[in-house]
Image (cartoon, rainbow, N blue to C red; front, side, top):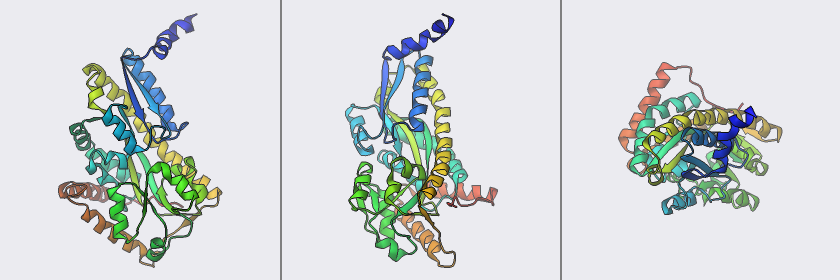
Length: 339
């Protein structure tokens, strides 16, 4: 009887719809750690706001890819979502400055720079009509292919996937003289099966979770970039929540998103072992070939070409200055290679 009394408030909240139900969507698969964390976060938010606010999250791209989700948010059919940098960049292009390819060596560098820029980025989203509930790291992205990519010539001969309408990846492909195949995220697996594409970049966990690894034989040792994630809601729905509960929600969300970032790193490490056991071979850069030097220099030129298009000169310089200062303070900062 005592247990029933203790559980009664939670049972009531579970049965009764909250005054404000935040309808969010994500491309993350059902059963993922994100699903677990959002469910826990929803329960805590309902309890601490007196059931004024709750969350309903649609998983596994059932509401479409990130472009479609944003369109539904603007139409009022959804209130927000969990996004990767590609989706976030459709709202605030500058957010992609911490996803620049071949800039960050490891998790600590990325985390430090993003924390330094977080207040600025949150303000920019608010200016565009969105509230950031929380930031999370999705992880380092590596290149997966059917053949070992050991030179520019080999790279140019592959059929690369480019996230549709993504200016950052387009700038990179242009710099390397590669003509990619633009596709939505939800079309990738089918396109791998039909051989419309044969090369793609994704996190190790993503490659396993979405079964892309079944279509590949090789994986690069050197990370291309680290993907930023965030969960945002429209200010239109946010304004319906009392100021007191707005503060509560932001405070509640923070530790959950921190755990999402921690878990992403753990999942990537475990996934790399799964990939190796599945027969995926790691392609290493020959240190004497000059290939890595060429990649780094070409990437530098690509990010310079995006000044005034994706971000300002001031923001790029600020980002690189923060990174340089961190490296001076941490001279042992090493590259997050796949071993």
